[in-house]
Length: 276
Image (cartoon, rainbow, N blue to C red; front, top):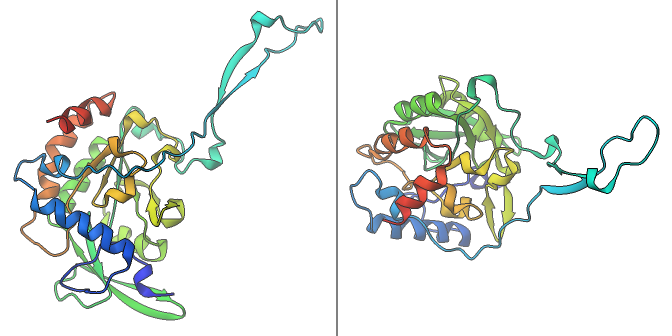
């Protein structure tokens, strides 16, 4: 297995010159976004929406017409007694477990890992925050991980306000130990990896409809627009981050999320921001 396939990320132009076609598309998208960025705290939101012309996934929920229980005398139920009962997908098909008592009533925020919270490289980084050993085809490789500025403050605040889920297209053998080191506060109630994504037209897409949460209460934070092409209306985009230690994007987004945490329907706020 190619070690670069362990981590799903856009490439750092300082590190790599030869990219796969899918990586080039994402890198070009984020480069374009950076040129149009303003210093408003909402600028990451305004600049990152694109029309991907992607067919939405087929809804999993179906309705089934079922009769009520038969009367004790064995008579069949009358037609006007028939109920239409929605049958959700089997719980085994949902990616997330039932909402805990602690998070009951909270909105759900789905947070990406690579280039959103950290930048990782198989090439040595002198100021790496973590060095994670990853076994690939019988050989242990060292992955150097750099934390994005203000990531600790951002995660702690998200953990207070939301039911937080880590969702990355990287493999668990890399992402799980990184999350162990990054999340010292138990912010992530669940962790989802590449196998939970939908491979669609060359991209690993995070299909929010499979989470088992009401979509009007789900927000995804991701640097790659291709990751949320099924649900762009649920996204708060962020700029890809590599090594700029003066970056304040995560810090700047906290006021927005403080407001979103109070919303019964996140679409109303996100749509109003897109309209500006």
